[in-house]
Image (cartoon, rainbow, N blue to C red):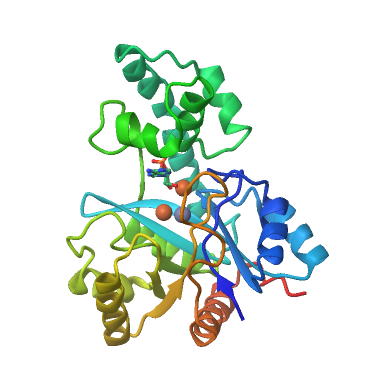
Length: 292
Ligand code: AMP
Ligand code: FE
Ligand code: FE
Ligand code: ZN
């Protein structure tokens, strides 16, 4: 059983359409795939159709941009009713924040002598609701200003770089609760991915667990072996489910090939058990896992 619980399609900043991603996963020998685009469920229907076609088990999810104690946290939400109004309201705020910052990033790029238009970004974003820095990066690549997304982040778009602009992110504790009320479960994505400072640490993870968090993503390309060991121990201590994933973005991110990290079947079973309990308690029409 190869279980990959975190991937992106063109519905956000991946480079494959949702159906193409599902077919790539089946071809790569993945048995269970979660589609977790940033802040949107827009890819779900196409992914579901493809999953039924190729006989792959599909978990519908999303990766929500949240904030806690002033820091960004990516929250994976699996199987929530995407029409639950408080969740919709938060996602709408994040999505409009994503759109609003584009002109500001382009102003900064222009001041640096790089002329990218909103149309260039729109073309790169190709209809996604979740316009992100990777689409600005793609526009820069198309103009020949940089070689690839990595160079665009390193030179211009990464945190602390000159064209970086922050955006709205949903309050983490509220979002954990809204997803539960929508009949879904939450897992913190790559908790120590961008910092070696081991935040969120034990007190924060205990607080998130008390707020309803189900798990943490431990096996992720951005975690060192030492971080994985430490996070696994914390998960055991706090009774959190341990997941693993590729965080695949198609050609948009190197070293994140489908299935490069996976989730243990027992941990996946625990996640689904928690989701079933949340769905039953919510009284909402939460989506089921798509089974071949
Ligand atoms: P945003 O959500 O618009 O702030 O952009 C963040 C996204 O950019 C993350 O979800 C990553 O997928 C992507 N990203 C961050 N750093 C890099 C990088 N160095 N190369 C490619 N993609 C990146
Ligand atoms: Fe991304
Ligand atoms: Fe992420
Ligand atoms: Zn991701």
